[in-house]
Length: 210
Image (cartoon, rainbow, N blue to C red; front, side, top):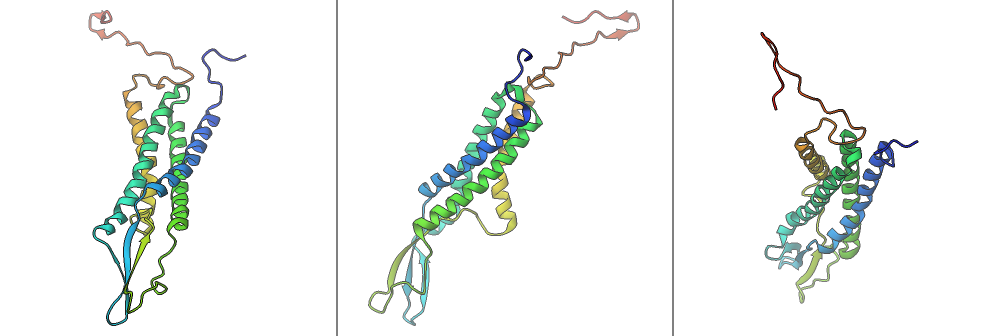
């Protein structure tokens, strides 16, 4: 017999659903980023000494910073929305939901990075400076380089980029929890509401305040 007000699915299944859904959401996020992220336009030029050099046009080098910011922005928006929706799943509020958000968003960020890298690689390819069609008659060859997904290639930079969406979701969910006036956060099973105990004075028990 089902208890009135009990959720239809178990806590473990709810957490697994959140984690799996957020992980899969990384695929379209990565594809969307690859579509809107700006490439880095440049040239491969032949100098008078016969040396091949690669240079970027105008402020195009700024896209090395803009593109990773755009990906983190998309992932952060997904994290805020996911944390807000997870909080609305009232029956399963608690630390387990935060764990599901952390696992799902970390996996989703990794899949978004992988998807974006693959799509960008297929779209722009790799610049071959040595094979660029430059000659003394045509010294400049215009190229477009695919945008990067990370600000750098050190382990710390990569880990920070992958964990930032999860940290954002944990912060949003934690803020929602601090606004709750109940110890059980309104989840299931509900805990009895604690009534204030009457104060004890030297003359005896004081009447409760109204």
